[in-house]
Every structure is written in C-alpha cells, then in structure tokens.
Length: 622
Image 1 (tube, rainbow, N blue to C red):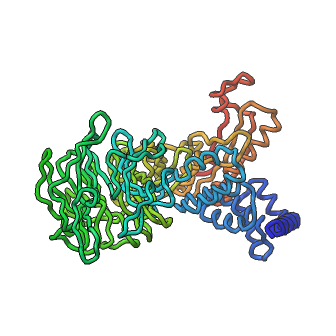
Image 2: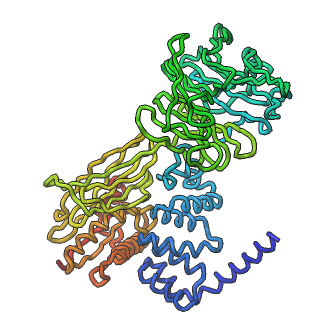
C-alpha cells in the first residue's frame, strides 16, 4: 500500500509541475530576473484565478523570502510543503518559522531538511543541537530528562544518589526472589555503580556489606562520602512488633548510620528516634552534615507521611521537627533531598500535580510554597526520589511512567535573559520605539521587538551561547552589538545609536558596503541591514530619488561582470521596493568592472577586490 501511494503521489507531482510552464511563464520570467515584487503580483493572479499549485506556492514563498517578508513566506511555504519539495525549501521554511518564534514547528522542518540533505553543514549543526534558539514555551520545564542504562526494566530501581567521587548509589529489587509478604514484591537491596566522565554508568554491584535478607535502603551520604545513613527493615534488627492475631511480625523502617574504613562500610548504628510504632525512612543529609531530613508517619504530622528534620552534632541527634504546611499535606510526602543551595526536593501526592507522586521543590531559606517541577520530570504516573549533584550538574529521579520504577537523569535547563538598552549617542538619553532584533551566531534573526518606553527590550536566550543585538530606529544609524555567552541570569547590553543625517552627502547616500555571496545576486542579511538604513532615509526625504550603481571586482570577463552587476543592482532595487519605496523613485545600473575603486587590474589582493565589489547610491533628486 505504501509503495502504491508513493508512486501515485510522484506521478501527480510530475504531471502538475510539467503542466505549469505556460501558465507561469510571465511570473517565472519576473522571478528569474529578480523582480520579486512584480513576480509576487503575477503569481498571486494565478492564485486568484484558481490556477495555482504547490509549484506556485513555492515560488511565492521564495519571492517573499528574498524580500525578507517572512510571515508571508511562511504562509506560502506551508502550502507548498503539502507535497514533497526540495531540501532547500524546507530549510527556508524553517528559517521563516524561527523568525516568528515558532521554534518547535521550525525544528520539524529542519528535521525534514536534514533527512533530505544530511551532508549539508546546516543539517549537521541542527542534528547536533536542534534547540540552539531560545525555547521556553513550557515555562515549567526545569530539566531535560533521559533514561539510564542500568535499569532492570522488570524490577524496581529508585533512590539514586550520586556521590562526589562519582559513585551512584540506589536501591533495587533485582537481586532476590524473596518477597515481602506485604507488597508481594522482592525485597530491596543497596547497589552502587560508577559514573563515567561521559555520564554513562558501569554495571551495578550489590553493596553486600550493608544488605540483609529484608529491605535495605534508600541511603544518603555525607559530603566527604565516608558516612552513610540508610533505611532498613526492622525485621532484620529485631525492631518489630508481633501481631499474635494474624501470627505476623510487623517491622517498621528505621534509619542507621555506617562509616567507611579502608573502602569498606561498617560500624552500623541505629539512630535514636527509630521506633516500633512508626517508620522513619528516606534520609537526606545536608552538605554541612548538621541537619538530617527524612520521611515519617510519626505522631504530630499533617497526614499520612510527612517530611521531618533533625539536628545532627557528631553522633548526637536532636528532637525531630515537622517541616510544616509549606511542605507537608494530608497526603503522602516522602523522598526528601536537600541540595547544597538549601533547596529541598520531595515527592507528594497531596499537592496539586499531574497525578500520582509529583516532585516538588522549596527554598527552605524563604517562607514560600513548594513549586511543582512540571514536565518532563512529572507525569500522570508516580515520579519521586529526586536528587541533584551540583558538582556534576546532574540530577536523578525515578518514575513508573513505563509501568515499572526506573531511574532517569535530570539535567538542569539553564534559563537566561538578554536585555538591550537603547540610547542616543549624542545626548545619552534613552530611546524608545526602536526595532530590536536578536540574532544567532549565523546571523539568523530569532525574534524582533519594539523596545519599551524605558528603552529596553528583553529576550529569552540559551545559556553559554553567543548572540547579537541588531537595533534600528528612524533617524539613526543601525547598530549591531554582541551579547556574550551567559551561564544564567540576566545579561544587560547598552546599544548606542548615532544620528542618521551623516549618511547624506551632496551626491549620494553613504552606506557600508553591500556584500553579495560569491557568484550570487540575492540580498544577504548584512546587505538587508544596510539597505534598511537607506529605506529610513528615503522615508524621511519623500522626494528623494536614488540611482543604484553596482560594481564587481576584476575577476571574470567583462560581459560576465556586466551581467552580474546588473542583476545585483536589480535585486537591490527590488528589496527597496518591497520595503515600501515607490519604484518611480529608484533606478538601477550595473557597472561591471569598468570603474574600479582601486585600479589594481589583475593583481588585486582580496582586500582590494572587496573594495571594488561595491554598490553606490547616487542622489538623482533630493
């Protein structure tokens, strides 16, 4: 069925494109002669007369793309790509979407482009880092999530904590066939795995010196890695109650400490607040070792299980304290983890979440409510046992989103802002109503805003990535300023604009050189920036008429250079028309290599050739 369908589509496409030559001849001639504005009118007539197909839509997209009308270009590319197009069309479509801030849709088009042109450097760059543009559409996204290789897939793995010596400790039910009669699931044991420099994990090993025939774990470590506090089933230590009626022993979870000597764990001691009346489990020790957080259903809580803390002074422990209503609810709270920044992560079923256990965080140094970590950490399933290691900038948590408890990595998403402040170069005063664009390192426009009355424009950006601000305002010269890479927070950049009137002389409008790509005549991004300055001048002087004269270097023969310069001059005029300048105010002339700025003949250096490749904007009428 798939092959038949593909063949049918191919025949339709071939027939349609073959039949368009006569109908599109006039529009195609305008397009091929770079008269994009007139070509648009011709193609739109075909649309109005119901004579258009995806070829016409593609041509319209290219026309608007070439005159930098990205909104209209995106509209027509969307229609064109209803049938298969060449790779470059998808690339252009993606660029127009990015310019509108539609990053997810743009990435879809880039994916198609990459499949069609996998060797293209643009495709390679995209595949390596598809989200290089700022994308914070989901404001709750704080972490990127991925599975880990050590999961058993059939048994529970959770309670993962990464030590500062790159050892990942976790608990798992993978190692035994003995089952807990209360849960009908295997007992838990403590395991360890070495984390490699690339983030991969070694084959897990059971921590036999600490494991018993009953439940052991989860654990927490001191900052130096030499003290462990871990949970253990009371049945293994005699810390249980007999229920004679049912002839069973009820063992409560308790907390125990152990120390490492010569690489081995020993000296196991029960903590003084263990009880046969309630459980204490899920330990987390603060970085300074002075506070232990844990989960318990001990009296004095808000509901089922709560998060508690207790002071630690060497081997002495204070009285446990409930963390209060900012953390605890009438539901279940458990799996606390305290970070070096004093941020408490914990799981709760009592707070508003996506379903089951959700992971929350709260800054204990502030009197504020806990915050849901949101997707992709939280799902409709149980998500819990979240921990972070700031040294390696990685977190781990567990979830049963696949039907069994698995461990996942959580890599923090760095959130940053770039703020442009626009000022007048002469007076130093703030300028409002300026057009501020933020560009990536390839000069692709990511977003454009009109700055506020206080002179600022703010953009969300990716961390550790360089950007550029391009700022324009009527009556001022355009300016481009680099935005340095950031590790997070706000980067403030002041952009100073100089008055525009210095551009006008007695005979011409002086612009920086309008560059063209080798052997091409389409306007580049840099060229568009300069031409926008001319547009501003011509709008300020509505009677002004301009002759565009384009020159080439001395490479190539005279006839070739003459035609190339004519095409470049015509493309320049078409761009100005697309920006609202009446065609009657513009004329174009290609000069070829007949009037070099530097008469170096055939011995020109690269720098001399660059100076000879220029455009002049002569004032015919002021």
